[in-house]
Length: 236
Image (cartoon, rainbow, N blue to C red):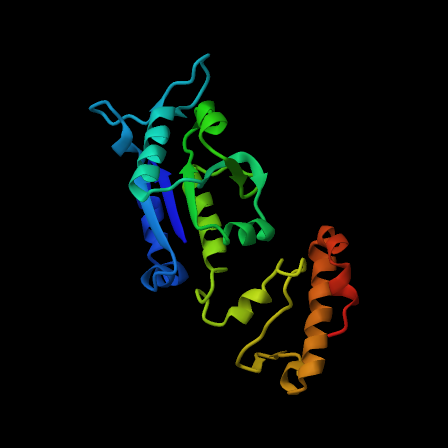
């Protein structure tokens, strides 16, 4: 997979992309991630990427030209033809695990990161092929949102996570929240690990985990239950 990110603040991304699983995935050449500074695609001596909104009002708007030029450069330099161009915006479709799986099947992705008050509407209307939001709240910019999406889809790539079975049991993978987990010590100041987990009886452990997953989902995310009838009725 190849991922390209156009942003006015590349250092926000560079640190996170060089840590943990994202770093290892790049080192093992399972994914290539390149960051492009929008200021490199400006035409004035001040390398200005934003301007005041037409019609007045507070805040600054990211100019359209740097985005169009950046995408054209990426497509030409990387020889891309049919590539998804994703604008990270709170006005986009809410991101979820199903979307992460879908994006993890792509060969190339271009992410456009907004900032300040917003992005010139022509970027959304004529350049981006899709808009994604990671939730109903506002961030300073799309860089952090892009990192969330990139991290969530890269870990789904084959062999990125060492024990891939651990990914399969994550929350939302089967439409449920994951069950609770414990590790050593067995007794922490009187707080005891459930005995079933110490029994060595794998069928009983699996049954307990399924029950705990269902109960946790009932308590915390009842909205998920209507899509999980098969999981609820399935025998462990």
